[in-house]
Length: 494
Image (cartoon, rainbow, N blue to C red):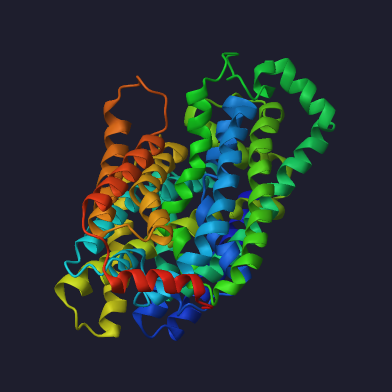
């Protein structure tokens, strides 16, 4: 039996299991709250693994190793930034957001929370935030579909367009069927599979090459600059702005809806601490291993990968090092990474359009059954748009993720942080922060012409924070109802 047939069988078994989970929860999903947030019934393990699997996406096994392959240990700066961002998000945001979203009208989406937090009867906060989610998540979902397309193309030699189509159909299927609980339980399985793959590959490669010392010697002989954390691969010193830009990836966590919804869905805020410990263990090991894969791949691979082709380093190493059955399992981890993020993004986008626009603006009295089916239809519609954006096989997974990550980080990050910790914040301040943060990211990304190296999330978050503070202080103080609700979060045991 040929290796491609064996790998195909492994993929089919894996996909069947994911669809089975979707079908199981299709039978159990009766209302929009269950479809969108799982009835706030996640345990610590599922919350932790689902949040991190949906966070890291295909770029953990493709984008980051590819960056490390080209740039060397410079990639550590991204890993450090992401690790710190993950920890701070779990430590200071998770518990308070879980409490606040239930106290503020039992909000089941981030947009609903913004509306309920500030008692915004105009619904403008809800609509604007839903539109931001629609724009940036469509781009983000597209990055996942590109990763899936590259996976099937590299492993099976399937033309990119067909590979992209297969991956899109699979993700749509179980997200459409089972909603949030299906997504979270598949994320648990996918997170475990991703962790297994990303740790076993570098360990095996180092042994094959001849040990850690041999790897370091060979990397040095190729390009000693690859092992210097303060220079790029050309030997040029990294500027302070470049280092800040790499570390700034960690700032994005405070505004990522697909991660924040996991905090909102955990059974109780008392389970957050345990979930944080699980999540951080997964993150630290996985990020470190991803960077090592790229560097070791520079030695292990005979061919010299250039540009976006470097994102295939993990796949090529797996194909070369392992028997077909094991290779199939490890390559399925990339599919798991892709699916675990794309499904979450589709679901959050569907919830934004269904709960925050369709129900809130057009049909407030829609039945729960109708809302669930509108949400399922939205999953398909958004996936189609993301699919069209992903048609270019030369697209970089990391570049697409970076753009969307900055958009959410700047558009929502300051709003989330200040809304849960600053009682003087107002609705107009929140609206100003969302709009200025999102627009700054778009303008900085597209108009600076390379003059500034600074990652757009940094100016975006600064401008957003300033706008929130100034507009809030210039306006009327929040009402007693808003202040009382804010104070109640501190003492709540939810």
